[in-house]
Length: 117
Length: 115
Image 1 (spheres, rainbow over the protein chains, first blue to last red):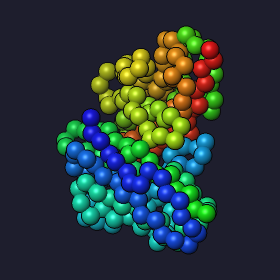
Image 2: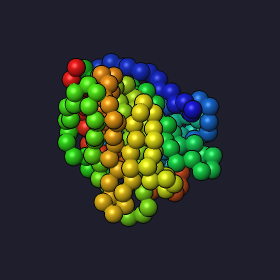
Image 3: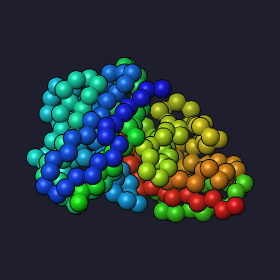
C-alpha cells in the first residue's frame, strides 16, 4: 500500500519558536495533501487542504499566518507552526491522496506530537 | 457538505462478543464512507471503505460494515471481539469525486474489550 511519512514524530519546543513538520508520500505522487490536528481524546479536525503548486485552503477558524503550509512538490508538504504557544500542543496528522485515477482513499501519516513548553 | 455522527463515545464489550459501532452520515452527494482505527499515540489505519460498489463491505481484522442509504448509516461490526480490538474507531465521509474532496471525521468511539 501507499506510504506516507512524517518528520519529526515528536517535537518539544519553547513558546515563541517555530516548528516545521514534513509530510512525504514515499511511493506515489500526491496532488493534494491534508493537514489535521487532533487534541487528546478528540477526533481529527481538518486544518487545511494543500494543493501542489498553489496556496493552501484553510478551514474556518484556522489562522493561515500561524500555520504556514507549503506543498512544493508532488511528494512533499510542510506545515510550519509559527510562534508556537502551549495551546498549539497537539497531534498533527497529514494525509495524501494518490493522484492516480480512481483512487478514493487518503493515506495517513503516523502523526507528529508537538509539545510547546 | 458532509458530516458524521457516531452514537456512543465509548463502547465496552466482552471478549468474544459481537462488536457494533454505529455511524450515521449526512451528505449532499453520494458519499464515500470509511472506518479507521487508531491505537494510542499512533496514526490512522484504514479498516474498510465504501465507494458505491457492494453495500456490504469487508475489511481487515474481521470487520465489516453495511451501507444503508435509507437509514444513512454505515455501522461497523465484528462477530467476535478480541482484546487487540481495543482502540479508537473513527467513521469518516467524503464526496470522493475529485482530489480535493475533504474527508470529514466523526467524533470517534472508544472500544474497550473486557476479558
